[in-house]
Amino acid sequence: MTKDQKSGSMSRRQFHRLAGMTVAGAAVSPTVARMAAAATPNPSDIIAGVNPTMIIHNAKLGVMETPLTLLRDHDITPKELMFIRNHFPPAGKQAWMATTDAPMVKEWNIRIGGLAVRPRTITLKDLEGMEQVKRVSVMQCAGNGRSFYAAKAKAPGGQWKHGGLANVEWEGVPLKAVLDKANVGPSVEARFLTANGADESPAAKGADLIKSYHLEDTALDHAILAIKLNGEPIPAVHGGPVRLIIPGYYGNMNVKFLNELSYENMQSPTPFQSKAYRMVNKPVEPGKFTTRDYDLGNSHPTYGFKIMSVIFAPLAEDKVKAGPVEIRGVAWNDGTAPITSVKVSKDGGKSWEQATLKLSDSPWAWHHWSLKTNLSAGTHTLRVIATDSLGRTQPIDGTALWNPKGYEWNGVDLVKVTVS
Image (cartoon, rainbow, N blue to C red; front, top):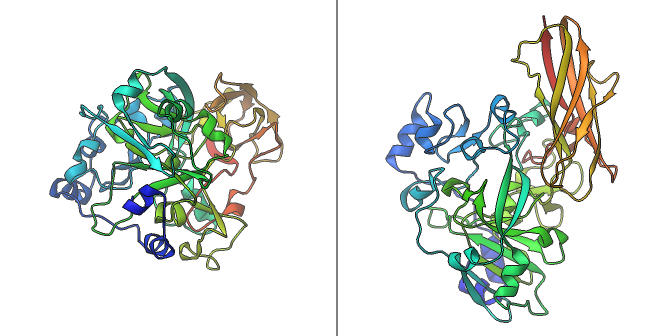
């Protein structure tokens, strides 16, 4: 953040200067560059400690998704199987981020300022000494499922299937308790809380990843400053030592390496808030609306999850024999309303059967569902659709929500299986 941002003031000239920055590409270390150029790079050579069968989308940035054949084996996703989406290369000054180990830092400070009446600094030691709470929640990339939009038109970016997904346990201090502990209150002009992390673009004029949230958003009531993941210090690659966790929000909104919170009278004009990670307010068509056309008026940030369900088994690569078969998977939403129904079709959507739904204790976690049915020899097209108590459900044709950035896919899942 600029000095003016930290003080809470921002001129129109500064706003447009920040808004005009581009999300720059970055130079990387020779080691990472060589790995990126390799024909078949090993994921664990790019990010130490990850499962070697992770699917690489971008070797330079270490972007990886989890094969569903591994994801389905764990109710709580192990750190080595968590998808990875960072925006700047883990090279140079940020080489410490390229591991599933905890970051080797002795001290960590989080500045609380902007339009705060009484700015303060909270340390990692302060957080460790406060009462801890747990949040079991889905972590999901906003681009999860992007590849399925290609049925209408390919959207640029990593062609994620469903593996940009994890179900994990975070532990830390409630955001509200942190602000209260610091004795901080927003001034009357403050409308947004803005979060910044220690990661930064290595490019001279590269944009910083800064995210903003409406102060009246009730999702902040459940937010925590997490210092543990699955009972251990948060791995460096997943945002340790401190990560802002807002359960039910897409991954980019859960700021990693958190080192600054500020009250502001407007949302951050930086590209990662004002241009990137935004959904259009109404349907658009390929070629008639592009990534350059986004602005604060015709789009909104990728905040809460759309309702979604995924088939974990059987998958296309599974060997399935005719007779009784259990079709199973998970469903989730933003946690604001319980999921009430999951239906499964084994004939491509001509008919549907009610699956058994097992709700998790946490509203933000994924919820398991299953259906025991008979499958005859031949090819079957399986589909699944979830609905919650607010009536929110999945579109039969997910491409109806096509957007140039390929965000927030939540179409009915489809798996073709061959039964012998």
